[in-house]
Length: 442
Ligand code: SF4
Ligand code: SF4
Image (cartoon, rainbow, N blue to C red; front, side):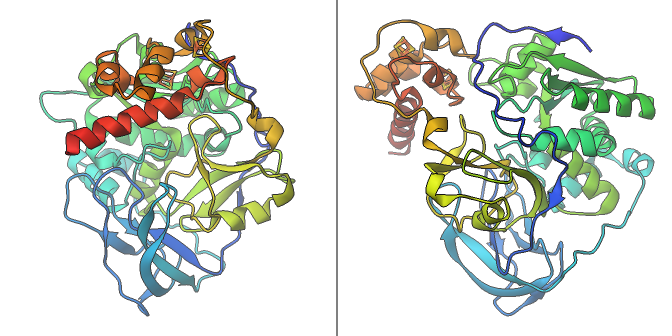
């Protein structure tokens, strides 16, 4: 397990110590669940159920005939109350199935096949199971896994990278999954490699989670898996971004506008790998996930296993939320996450964390003119010049910003984090990209 070094990025205050040592526990079951029909990149699902219909846990309640989509399932047995637009983490309203739960306690999963039987399935069947189970990238992107497992010919994935970096401050859900479900994570990775015909696998873990790296290495050894190794990488944000992790672990550079498959690599989050294993071996769709609840305005931070559809408010209340101290509630990490104003927004397949942050934690301060210090350039993992890009976007010259690489920016926030002038660089980059999208649509 070697340490790999990189020269870009930032070192934000980790904030992980309050939850890293806390075992995952089951979140309360809410009185009502709101399950959005769009929790993924791609075409939103259409409902397969009607009001007053009884559903069982794991039943498919939404799907659509489209290439890039992922079905959604009932996370608990209950009665469909209504189907209507509800506030969503995207900031918009999304058609959602409102469900009144019936089951408590939740039934345990029952094995449908062993991992050895799973690894003997044809690759197409693993892709089909991943689709039926509604599995999407759980690290935040929500890209449907069955599509990722089908790179268009002649592209061929040789290396499967498992992303255990979890570089965003505060978040420890992936850390706990690697510690508590190392065998399942590894089995999921083996299934993914089998589906792709990938020859080798690398599990990348930051050096602030050595216990997780050792747990994964022990699982690899127990399984006698020679094609997979664990590699420790320096703790540095945004180490866990797809393109940066590929470069750190394999030395391969994904071309501008390209995909990991262009350089023969697939990256999967550790939670996603465990979900693939659960679908293949237990027949369980993606209906729950681990969520870190933390921040200075939370009295009892925790890692909670929450049902998809649980309102954010329920998890905050479970963790001793202090509304009076809260400056902002963020879904995801503080750097790439999104601020929300409606606490009835539900947990989805991609909700890795809920942070209730105080004023001190947000470092709120006034904006000053750029002093040309170059810190943003040093921090950018994509080797962009964020100060210039932001200036162009602010002036409405987004076409010029595009020529300078605007579309390579994946909004990691490293540039804005260290800016002494407190310029909201990412805001302007997003404005520029939105304008490009509008122009293209027009
Ligand atoms: S320009 Fe984009 S990719 Fe580069 S540091 Fe800023 S947010 Fe991250
Ligand atoms: S870090 Fe801020 S002040 Fe320094 S060059 Fe970039 S935008 Fe300007």
